Image (cartoon, rainbow, N blue to C red):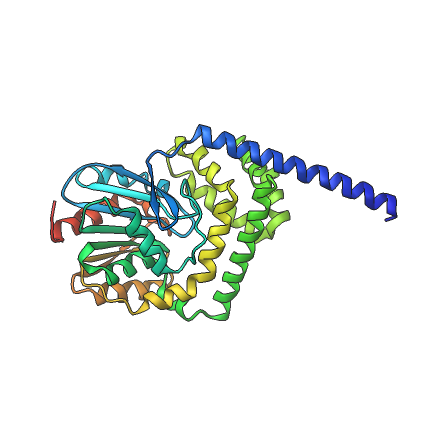
Length: 338
């Protein structure tokens, strides 16, 4: 390519980049107007967190989402639990409607942000946590036992396998961190927004081509799986979740969580939990994950594990009634009852 060709290529590339930046900026501004936070914003250690409360009662139930999920992931469960308890779901810093935090994403910091954000919420509390959220719930119960009445761990992340990851697990982490960083760049350039707009409009080939071009087959497969899970939620929530995925901060935050996962798993592995615990293990959990779930339940004097057949990792979307039933059981056996 000659000098003139390079100049033309640079100009065309610059135009596309500028168009993408403008497209993304306008989209973010539109999303803020269309989807204001349904709950309230509270200060928590330097970043404002979105907190959504429903229901009344002596029992207080806190919902902790998965690694890159938000309070919306509990929308099939929280309204049902709110019929017999005061419920609180929230978005961790950098996710959903919450502001990003510059502090390390270590579990000790996440527990303090949780406590700070829920300072005006009564206690003790039953914490219901999905996947990565289980790390935070167990660390919270271990560090502040007087504030936690019980735990419901929904297919929690395997502590042992991530505290001492195999080379295969390390590759998974490196791949996940790389894809998160790529996603953040593509979100800033409006590419993620374009792909999701096409997908929402009914196109499948366009988004698949973009996903494969940007992150390969594994990234495209991950996107397909996540879209399938999200579609189990009420349709009116889909545009809100799409808006969250278009925000670069969610990719940045997910990468930081993945990077800190082994260190966080080590920090929680030997946590002592002295409250009632129900571990809901997905029907398709691996042998290693199932063993870890059994160990967590066994280490609590009032713990048990339940295999939830016919569902995948997102138990609260596949079998929300199983989660609601477990929450009721823990609240009834905890110090305050229902």
